[in-house]
Length: 259
Ligand SMILES: Nc1ncnc2c1ncn2[C@@H]1O[C@H](COP(=O)(O)OP(=O)(O)O)[C@@H](O)[C@H]1O
Ligand SMILES: N[C@@H](CCC(=O)OP(=O)(O)O)C(=O)O
Image (cartoon, rainbow, N blue to C red; front, side):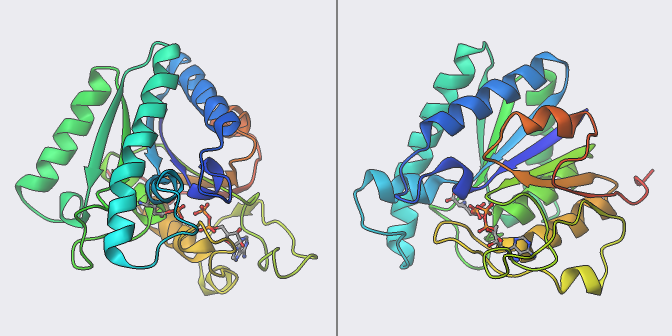
């Protein structure tokens, strides 16, 4: 299977913005193993801004654009250094792709270049790691959140499965951080207004978009014929069960794959 795995900041970083070493080590081990089992893995990783402000010893996630972009420049290095080191331990070669909106939605050469390069990396057996190019992104050309970005990638390369790893088990009938009696929804067969109304914003100071952007991602992915699962990134070994089609988190069933 061709699987796009998106890892949110809340999965990769401690609330301090510093790397959660135990988590990332386990994630890389499981993803390496899934690759060894024959799956094609494309990783969409957030965390550049959080890693950057942590490393720059700033007290909290920056709000102004220049400091965010500077943090992303620092943090992206830290992220890729860590991924390279960990995946190399399991004999996998990583490749970094930093993109903005025109690289994936625009017509013409940029989109073609992104697509052809990504396909070639997969043919060569590399493990592509994608993030938004936050350091040069402006409002006009940015996608803004990696839930949407990962769905656009999954749709464009006709992935079989998109997995969003978050700080929560899946989609609940209301935000569990506000309602302790909220119940998990295991399967969404059709994304309608009733489901969309359940989604709230981000519950942490690190995440971007909350469930709203995850449901937007589900719309893009399932319309393109790609199933999507939201699961808790605190348990990386769950990736095995998700890839095997076992019930974990919330699974959004796909529409018909375009011919
Ligand atoms: N209906 C809902 N079900 C589950 N989580 C929800 C819901 N509405 C809002 N949320 C919030 O979405 C958060 C996950 O998104 P986010 O903070 O952006 O993290 P990530 O780093 O994974 O992108 C949850 O921690 C939760 O507070
Ligand atoms: N591109 C940004 C992350 C944007 C984003 O969507 O973050 P998240 O909600 O943690 O997946 C970064 O690397 O910091």
